[in-house]
Amino acid sequence: MIVLETQRLRVRNWLETDRPLFAEINADPKVMEFFPRRRSRQESDALMDEVRRRIGETGLGFFALALKDTDEPIGFLGLARTDLEPCLPDGTVEIGWRLAVRFWRHGYVTEASEAMLRHGFETHGLAEIVSFAVENNTRSTAVMQRLGLRHDPARDFVHPRVPDTAPHLRRHVLYAISRDEWLKRQRRA
Image (cartoon, rainbow, N blue to C red):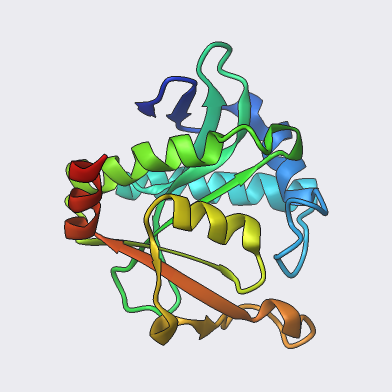
């Protein structure tokens, strides 16, 4: 199932042949710098199965991001319902991404995320989309800013699933964009 395409990219459901790439990004120390741990291949395979299940049930989730010309997977991107109450209310939808390091600095995340925001607001009728990251993850927050998401300091939070053994990863900043803000941005573009 192809969710959307951009000039260079395709957002689609995961294929069995994508497992090595999924495992690679979940085990890479640079990709996982702002996460409390990396995943083994077995853990990564189980997570991929869970992601595919959620996509099948809800139509939302972190889809494979692939190069359009070759269908080579390069990472993931998508919209997903958060499960972080009381930090974020039930029904909150986040946009998130992760790429293999060799695909960084090509503008892929921004390109695909712009299309995913459109998909979220137009296809799913979302009122707001958020994104969050460890407060010093400037790579991710820079993408959020390029997409027009605004930092909402009142909604910053301490991530409840980050262990106390990783205090430098607990504080998260939250960025958000409403459908109205997104529509205004589209009219200006």
